[in-house]
Length: 56
Image (cartoon, one colour):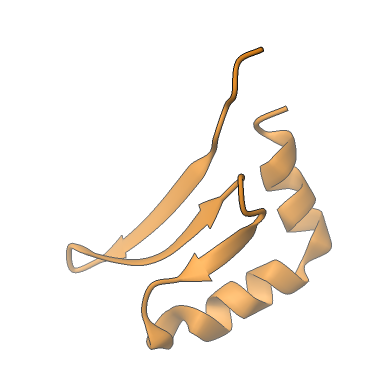
């Protein structure tokens, strides 16, 4: 069985700000400035399920 992992990484001014990790199943903010965005995206169950489905 092959393991597939999705990492969706966002950058601003060459700094990683937030990413989605399919192994964790949520967006993770790398900076405090992006925490509200990560929390908002994580609260959208349809979006999270869509990201998870991309690796199935």
